[in-house]
Length: 135
View 1 (cartoon, one colour):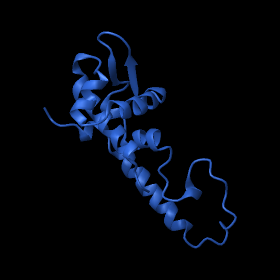
View 2 (cartoon, one colour):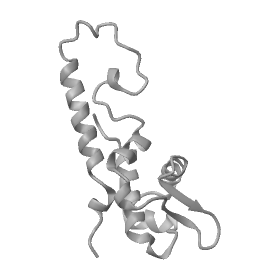
View 3 (cartoon, one colour):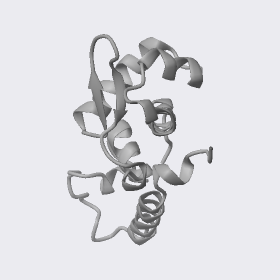
View 4 (tube, one colour):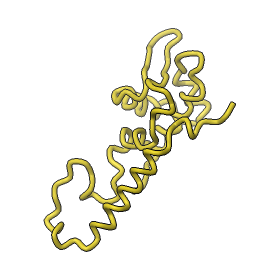
């Protein structure tokens, strides 16, 4: 499993919103500046986070984005699944994958299943609140 730039940036955005939304909605421009990210790239990431109910957005004056839930309720796994689509280590374990023709003879499937379980357990155990700076 290789986490893409999109996944890493989505995680940074979520953490930034968690740390800076005390006064309400955070403008996208401020997130981009703090994180050293392109505003255009954020314009592609944030709508997906909104569509999957991780983030809420408001347009207009005083608008911006904020988390839709408490940071202690959002896992790293959830953010990566939204931004990456799937985090399985091999294609045959991805959600909705067609059953492999070789499954009965596959001598490595147990390795991939075990790795997949450990990855998911670990990423589910790490919450956004765990990654926030203490202020």
